[in-house]
Length: 288
Image (cartoon, rainbow, N blue to C red):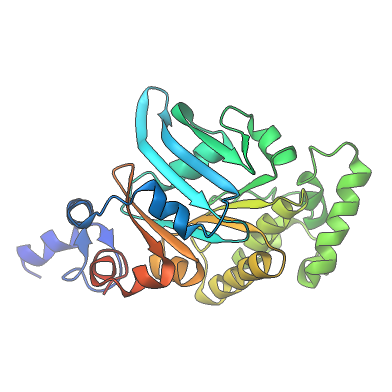
């Protein structure tokens, strides 16, 4: 192959296709910034359809002294799903980290059901505010059984018996896990581990689920399974879901609302279906 081909092989980008069609990260950020309409808070509240269960207003946050998010507003209605997409490094996971208490919040507020949770600890956000975080990394305890992993989901409950009782409710919902309850988690497939991670977050019966990259590292059949589970949690149990998803097409197809983050700011926001139809969003993030 010639030198020109070799240089294209070094490009890192988003979407699908050959190296000839992949857009570089820098180009994605530059082009996304150019098409940004910087939606106002009124438009974001309208997308939340009523009184939002989760409100983020004027959020400035980062790690240590490094500021990643700049004046971010976000509103999610009760029982809604919202997907964050954007280039690498745009601050998508930092939004989830900030909601759950993993960042340095420099300005702004985060409220759940009208209660200010901005400075609340992660444990209190889980136990008192009803927020659970499903990490993108493999977070199961491999040498513990499936059952013991679920018990760990109730570590903040008043007694081990409460955690066991809550775990039984989860097993009743997911028979596949119940059949493997005595198996060590390390023998589970990737899709089963993701199901266990989601199930463990349900032990505390949260109202808001923060889901970081649910499809990462999974085969297509398991990706569909995970999104079917999330759909049931939203529409069957009324959970509110805020998601970051590398597969932007899948995330927007699933979600009621989509936000495009660029350089730590909300560049675009609309219904998920409408963002899917936007040709520029398609070109930059959907491989089209």
